Length: 287
Image 1 (cartoon, rainbow, N blue to C red):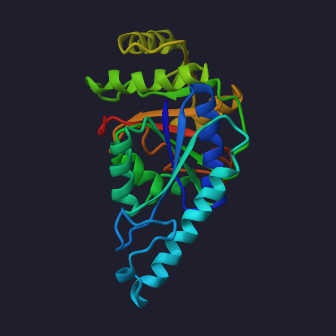
Image 2 (image 1 turned 45 degrees about the vertical axis):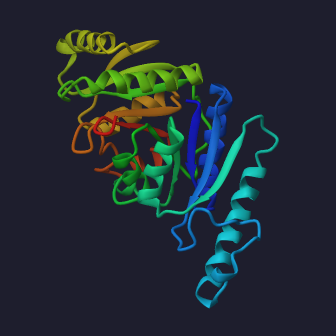
């Protein structure tokens, strides 16, 4: 995870994501790209240092020029607040709207990981529905690590990977596991491969064998397997992660199934409050 992108809207939520990105970069010896996406008519060659083409300075563009400069200064200010770290933080105001810009930027810079903040005021039902995080997961060709604004720092050396034995596998699974291995190695983390089941103890040994076969077949490193019982997969997975003091929940998914909607069907307010762990999503449709 050498190149880490943090999209910022200049909010405290995105600053929290930057903190996590810097922490990952420190462990992986990577660098961070802090980027605000702002679609404007002045072009990507616009000089934010004050040398402005006179034909652009008219009433129509005056406000936009001031906005770009103000945004550029704020991005620089946020980046400077991490000068005490050893991490290089590139900063930019990128001339595209968010949806198109993040895909374009990730490709141009060959980004390995996107780290994004998501508001803690959202319910668990809303975390991955209709927001920037979901659209990023759907479009970018690298893993996305989402973090809630009120996340308290936890044990990033312990990752819980939720799997579904009914999930269709193809050759992209090897690539997805490769991404997960890279992420885990960068954090010096172990991985718990977890299946949430309600079939009882009789079949647990068989299911654990399937999990081992899955992990070995795709080259997963430094892992343990666990079958835990719960009638609700989402609650069971989160309960396991909390009980083990895990730092990250990991999701390998297609956008139309699997665990992609891991927080999409909350049955209690408690689940919404407890789902505070960062979530690493790797969308198999894009890799």
